[in-house]
Image (tube, rainbow, N blue to C red; front, side, top):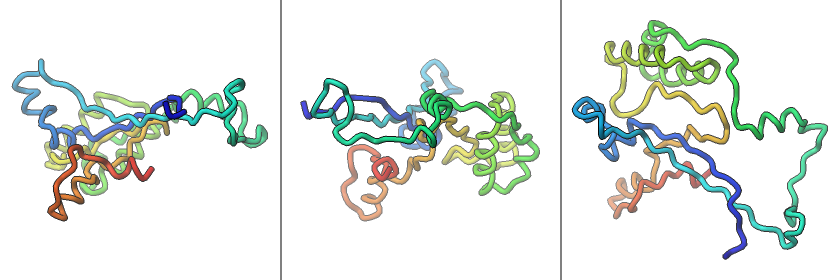
Length: 186
């Protein structure tokens, strides 16, 4: 009705531990009591719309965004358009290597290593278990998060940086949903 057309969506990964702290529907204790009601974390989606051109016979924008084919190659386009990045083959840090790090550095190191390696579920669980045994596995945020392998999935939105948090700190009425400010700013 307003001249916009849907052209895609961006998936925004969420921190399942923080999501549980807000909703109490994904809890580990609840999973252990009755796994039949267990769901998963819910990603968020940013919907992309395009302002339709005044001349729709060729679909080009009134003010096109152009790229030089010398700088933006066909090969780069094929990789970008696919929205899937392959691994370099580097490995995850071993459980003992990660467990040796201070808690405040583990998430950063783990995330960087995970970006450069092939995912291994068993190794991921092993690291989490060893961290838990060493009392280094936080209950308030996800410290061993696997990053997105595509820029089309936002994995760096801070779930706790919300309009509600600011309103709560100012003792104002809170908004009906935890409106993340990182999404709006981006």
